[in-house]
Length: 186
Image (cartoon, rainbow, N blue to C red; front, side, top):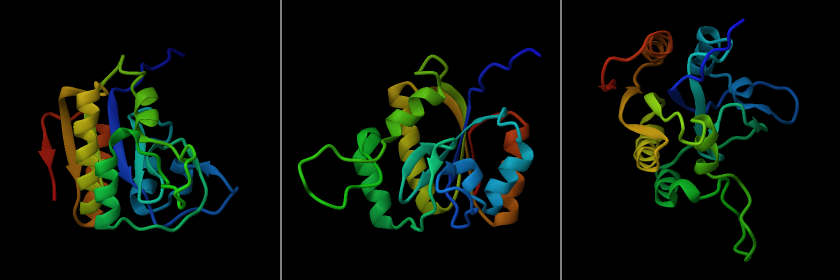
């Protein structure tokens, strides 16, 4: 079997309040179980159509193969603003104390880099999927990713938002076809 080249497509998906039970830690792509995550797993069961990342109010931006535990956190305007203000180097989850120690958590820069082979394969097609607060942060990160060379300056960006049935259709369509230009749904 000939190996497939890594896709130069990035799917950035909002986390899900619905989560699967299982081991304490399991990959986010298996833990999250909302309708969009089920659509992703059905449309791309072998994870070959796009690199997948998620945005979480608790964990920030991470690759979807990152092992996560069950948690409950909702995106708020305040969290969205802190994520945008922090840029690619701010670690999530944010520390709960103010001690002068190295902050725990992971930052977006450490997840986007390996997804695009450390800028050797910048993304040329990106889909942003989620509610308005998540999309606001995602668009901000896309700008930072472009500036950092992780997403090509002329990359196609598709925003998927709206009623959940429409979002599921649009997500499946994006996964199974290449985009032809910048599209914003909402």
